[in-house]
Length: 219
Image 1 (tube, one colour):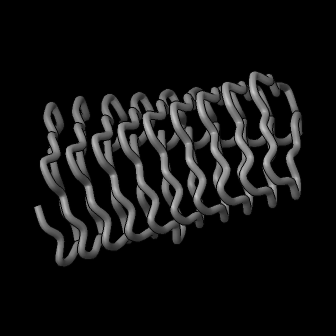
Image 2 (cartoon, rainbow, N blue to C red):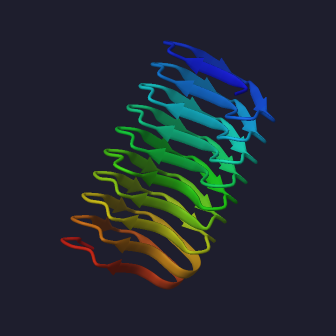
């Protein structure tokens, strides 16, 4: 990796560049209460920024682009915050949240990524996405196999397959999101349980809001 932070506490990395590495650009592993501000990670063979099994870390104003894996990957981590980051032109997802808990994602931008702009996946719980923008990806924001997540005031547009998808997930809330400019689905719930949709806007789509095989959901 370009920069590795392992088994560390109360570290601060600001204004660094990590690029052309054979693994991750910035790799944060088994660390606590570290902050990463205004760094750039690009043209790496793994993720631009990888957060693994770490707690109470904050990432603010970073850029992750042109990486072979995700722009920003968050795995098995808890109580981390991601604010005002930009992830674009990455081969898989812009921002990938996997099996993580109580993480917040506020006002990030994810665009021109091959798959999802922002993906919340595989038993992630109690994560919040507020005021993010996801556009020009295959899908804008995806929540899959996760629970108790909230999506509030996000914008997803000009994505290929769908703008926001909630699949095989439970107890999620979608509030005041705006989705538009899609030839398929604006908001798509598939196999969702006990999810609520409140004051969302969907326009210039083939289907604005679509529920498929979902139960106890409220609109």
